[in-house]
Length: 73
View 1 (cartoon, one colour):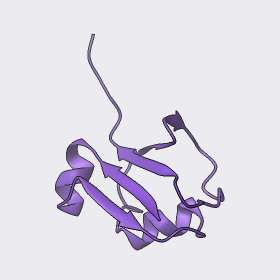
View 2 (cartoon, rainbow, N blue to C red):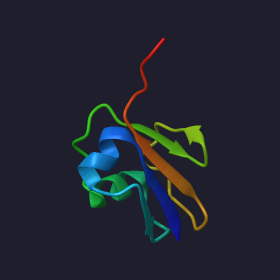
View 3 (tube, rainbow, N blue to C red):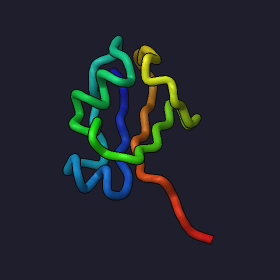
View 4 (cartoon, one colour):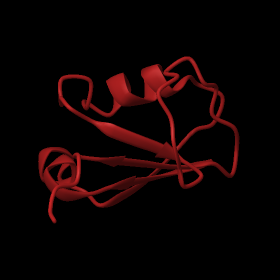
């Protein structure tokens, strides 16, 4: 299983802060399945490292964080 964490307005959009999903799918498929494909801009981290490669295949034990860009000074 994969742990998916949602932050900020992404959590508001999904209606959850945490979810468990099956492993073996691409990051792109996961984002589409979760209804986050239209959220722009969307920052994605896998195992606490920001990623841009949506073809990345997620494996059991991975942690995915979906969040809006951060701002501030």
